[in-house]
Image (cartoon, rainbow, N blue to C red; front, side, top):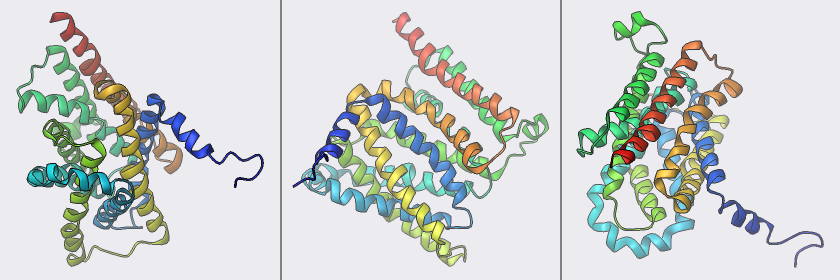
Length: 316
């Protein structure tokens, strides 16, 4: 029996209302993803990169076990024949991306992590043109060029001499490679099994947890592993529950409500939230070249996704 004045169904009612608001769901998703860059920087010296990667997906799998185990069991006949595909997707999109992301955090700032990560949408567009032979309009390619130029400005720290000499920070290169992996994962989603999104996510997360174990073992053998500090354990718990689990659930729900095309527009908020949080929470400096690069990245994405797409529709 509930106490007087307390609505026993309040949490359920709150989620019911929230789960019908796609904009709020997707804004929350990108806000959580933006915090991942801050968590990655805070984790330096608190938890080793491969430990963070392995623990992240292990925690997510535990949460998914309670939420989706019956659905996964029901869809197992459809998943089992696609084990090679699932292995590739989990290795590249989740384990590979995170291993490079958390390693990059040891060499570059959270501002750079978030800004360079913003290149993923145009890498997907470029990959679709080069690998899948999808038709891309010239205006869309202009957007790709603008975004890549913005990333180059970040990587070169706004210095033409560094750009000309290809003198890039190793962390910036690592996050760019991670973005390439995730762009490949995104393109690979075209071939995913005909199962509910939550089931597919659970299967790929399980692969990511398993594949991360050899990387953790290599870290131990190389003498780079250390037990997390108290703050390190808190960060492990945070990235395992929030960027790895909660944000995926809110994103899946947002896509269900308005479709992938409209939902993808919200992903452009990640390179906005990430640098803002890095400045506010970590006190990282925001240089003029960061502002210029952010304008180029977001402007390029807007040209490629909005103007280019609109022009393509007009010409059909």
